[in-house]
Image 1 (cartoon, rainbow, N blue to C red):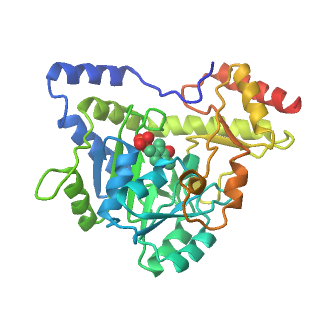
Image 2 (cartoon, protein in one colour):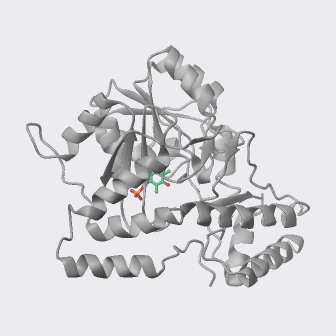
Image 3 (cartoon, protein in one colour):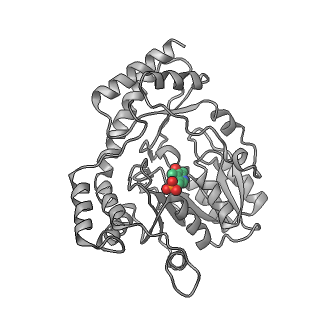
Length: 351
Ligand SMILES: *Cc1c(COP(=O)(O)O)cnc(C)c1O
C-alpha cells in the first residue's frame, strides 16, 4: 500500500536521537532551544513556545487571548480537523461556525456577517490542506472591530500569503508537528506571536510560577527530530508542489473531478492534495483496493460534529460528501507517482 502520508527521516535525525540519548539531557536542553529559535526565525515571528501538540497549542493560545467563559465567542470555519473547534470548547468559549469558500478556508464575506452578529473575541482562520486563508480580508474585518486573529497553521508549515509565511499573518498562531504534518516530530506543537503581552500570557499558561499552569513540554528527542525536519522543509515542500503540479496537469480532463486550486498571491504547500468528485466513496474504495492509500479529509463539518451555532454552511456540508485525498508526500518515488496517476485515471474513466 502506498501510504497517504509518510515522513522523510535521514541520517541527521538518527545521529541526533542517539546523541541526545548518550548525553543524558533528554528534556529542556539545547535542542528544544535550537528548534524554537530556528522555527520562529523561519516563520518570521519574535516569539515561539513549543508544546506537546497542535491541540494544546490552540488551547493555550485561546487562554492567552482571554477565552474563558461562554460569553467569549470564537469564529471557526466549517471544515477543519476537529481540534480547531474542540480547543474552543475546552477553553470555555462558545464556537460559532462560518462556511468555507472555494479555497476550503474561511469565507471572508460570511465572517463579516458573523462578526457583526456575534461580536466575537477571536477568529480562527485555518490554512487548510496547506494553503492560507484570504488573510488581508480576514485581518481587515477583525481589525475594524478589535477582534483577535488566531491562525491555525497546523497544515501550513512554509505556506505563504503575499510573500509572508503562514503563522505570521495574524495576532497569534499555532502549529502541529504530529507525525503526518509537513514538519513531523511524532507529537508536538508551537504557539507564535510578535506581541510581548501575548508572549507573557502564553508563558504563564505553560511555565510554573505564580499562576496555575500546565506542563506541555516536548522532549529533546522531539525537538532534535523537528530541527532536522525544518532544515528540509523547503525541499520537501517543493517536492510536494512538483507532484501536485503533475497531478493537476494529468487529471485536468477527468470527468467530474475538481482539482485543488492555488490562489493568486498564495503559496500552497500541499499538506494534503484534496480532490472532489460526486462518486467519492466508490473512487476511494477502488483506489485502496489497488494499493493507494486514498483517504477522506473531512467527512464532517465542525458545526454538525459538535452541534454548535452556525451560519449557512451548505457549501461545507456539500463538500464533505465529495472530498478525498491521494498521497502527495515527499517520500513518494517517481514510479509510485506514475502508478497513482495511471490508477486514478483508470478508476475515474471507468466509473
Ligand atoms: C493536526 C491539526 C491540529 C491538531 O494538532 P495535533 O498535534 O494533532 O493535536 C489542529 N488543527 C488542524 C487544522 C490540524 O490539521
